Image (cartoon, rainbow, N blue to C red; front, side):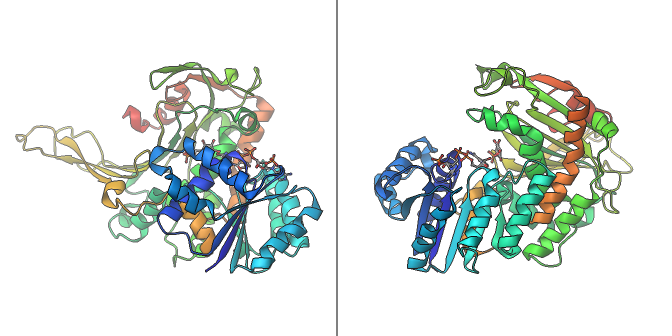
Length: 481
Ligand SMILES: NC(=O)C1=CN([C@@H]2O[C@H](COP(=O)(O)OP(=O)(O)OC[C@H]3O[C@@H](n4cnc5c(N)ncnc54)[C@H](OP(=O)(O)O)[C@@H]3O)[C@@H](O)[C@H]2O)C=CC1
Ligand SMILES: O=C1O[C@H](COP(=O)(O)O)[C@@H](O)[C@H](O)[C@H]1O
């Protein structure tokens, strides 16, 4: 199958830091279909050769195990092309169409790796140039909009030009192997499903913690904040996969229908419940990995009086038969104690304990990163005498060790799926809009009331109020248990 993959924003940070290395991995693993061309598009003038050199230099910043040798890069670089184009200029699209038509590949994947404010104009111009025929797929990078209205406007234009089957909305967390394993865990194994409900589960915690700060992206981040950057998309997508009903098939729409139902069942926020159930914070200077780091207000391109949140913790519920009354805690932040993304499913204690103060209840930890695996926490007798307390033990499954040769990174997987036309791991417009609908009352409450922005030291686990939020229900975050 021949394909053309076009990156609008071909010189941008996302393209050289994430997309090109992911494509190179697919190429190295022999997974990239033969007969492909990769075209980068941006506004400055460059030759193909200059662009290849640009990517070669950027690859030196990639993790060493993922860096190509010179010989590998030369073979990969033969696929790379560059074209100058101003995406805001309608006249620039005819040349692109010609470039694609001259070859007539089986599939053209057009990846919008640019600022979302350009998306409507790009889609309209693609339509006007006839670049919306059935061999074309469009990939839309997050964030899709800034709020519900802007997301709806982008989706309106996308739908007026492309069918839903042609629109691939990226949430790169869905491409992480551990997230796909979550689907397998729940729907390919009979073991957990009978327990996956309010009768057996006490609470669920989703933590997406980063030790990095905002780096050089301070201006983007300050317009965005943690709620829009991580909760509206990644954290809510994980929540839907944990809470959804079993889909009737593995088809994209069967899965997305179930995820949408979860989003619609989330307890809506009011101004009052935002004050009670949402904590926002901003990091101050502190220590991360033994190094002192500046506070958010000292970061490059961040206004000195910014009230942008770099941390959010919230409590919600999925209001349906399966989950009624079970707290779902979501938490994300920059400059936290570790880079650690995980979902913790805390089970209820046994109804009638016969062992002396066994203490811990069972817990399943779905580890997304840095490791990718599962931990099942159990209690065992350890050969102790009768009357002795039991010991906590854990079954530890490391997917990198279990499948050493088959691991595929998130962007690699999603790019290959977009080329192959598989939509399962992409987000449908109604899901995305429902997620915005749910977070908007939080944004409104913050704007209207200017409610408390707490601070936390870089390298900590966020403001104390986040621990109090969970402690109110008699629970604790995983690292406090
Ligand atoms: N960087 C990341 O890790 C992530 C980024 N994203 C999202 O991806 C998008 C891109 O981010 P990022 O790569 O960081 O941004 P950059 O600012 O680094 O890159 C933007 C790219 O778009 C090009 N561009 C801008 N305007 C035009 C235009 N009118 N015509 C043609 N090309 C244009 C720029 O090239 P030039 O100016 O030379 O024309 C450049 O190649 C953003 O929406 C971001 O939020 C999402 C997840 C992660
Ligand atoms: O989408 C985003 O994700 C990254 C975190 O991704 P990860 O795969 O490294 O966990 C985050 O740093 C960035 O701010 C956000 O836009």
